[in-house]
Image 1 (cartoon, rainbow, N blue to C red):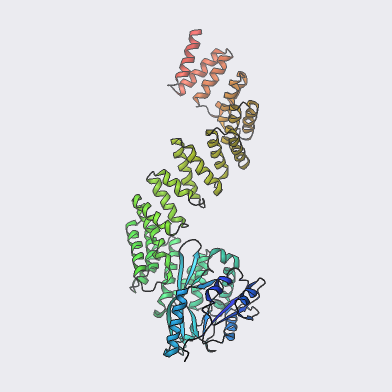
Image 2 (image 1 turned 90 degrees about the horizontal axis):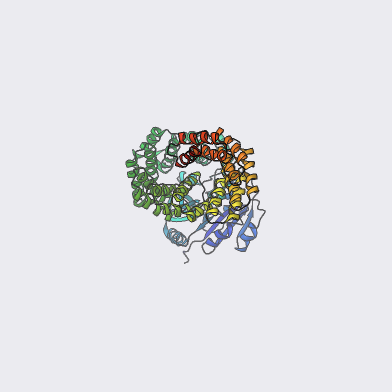
Length: 575
């Protein structure tokens, strides 16, 4: 007697050519039948499904996911039905587990409906998963059908008492909540619209209030999210602790973001009163302790979140709060406690697990800066693009350190990093121009200075450096033209006048130079070198009384101005 049960994998799709092949590849040796109901694809979705031998159905979209899914169930002919989406895949070990369990049930079991764990990948490139338990597998019977326009469910079948349920320790991986996928498919607008229709018809639906609160939270609408979650919290019963923990965690986070930490802690206390030690709640409490500057208690909470995650038989919710997010919290608390060596070590280890987690990188950068480990700071910066203004601030500080150390090559590395990241591009081009001058590459320096001026037409430092660059390379006329343009565009910047005066003095245009120095001194009357060079102009013009007055003013401003004293002595002796 053949006791091996058969499985129909049922799917609804629309324009899924990007994701469908990977999904079907994962189930081709698992499903006895693949049922694909298309709701209006205009790409290669149907031909891809046909290439895997799928039974194709068509459904005219009517804003109801339940109706579409029920169409796929009507087409299924196997003993069991298993529900998947195109952006999901099932791993080999889970396929074996499910087959083994179904074989036992076929022989003599009494379970009709199984839940499967779903790992939703939230961010590409790092271990950011949200784990939940969803009903995916049941005996093929017309009495089990979906309800609900969106976030559709067959939970009502279990609640009817006609069917027995259990959970299989198997998982599918879901990519549909990656931010780029959500944007591509316009999921948020679609889901919000359908959930609102459901809530208009049933305002006290715990299921839809919970999902609407999460949608508002994802959309950056904290007040609306709080209202939905608070209403949902008033509807929970003791047999749905999973949802209650999720609601409380979200509410605590939202209240914390609104600086209402007391309310956040009140929500957390509610869950702790049930003696539920869930990592998500403990982690959220740690974040509240950070906000209260209670860093020792925060450190304790983050360690407990990791312990709770490792000790739970089956974890659900945001799995990362017991992993790298808790490690971020530990590093943040250590840094706040000025335990920078430890903070740097934990942050570095955390980035090995989640290299794209920029809050951890900020902690590591701060720790390296506090420890004055400049080369480590440099290397940490250069590992990722400058996607945050705070990265830019660390880079600027590092440049100032390297300037004091005369490390031109390191300054250039940071400058190119900033240029690639498009952080303050005018200033970055200016920095690279300075580096090119230090490396005696006048043409490259000219290019960078000109680009800085194009990006910021009033960039007086770039004008001055470009003008003096021309002069130093024998193009005096071009240099004077650039400095003149700077004065015309930014007439209140005194140092342009002083630089231009120096150039005019060198080419022995003493009278024009004197007038230029005077214009600069009108704007910066406490500039002792300006009076000294003005005195030199008068001296060359044999205007000794005027030179004497200029030298004396320079000495008044700087009593230790030896060159001015020497020149004044020469005039007095000549007299």
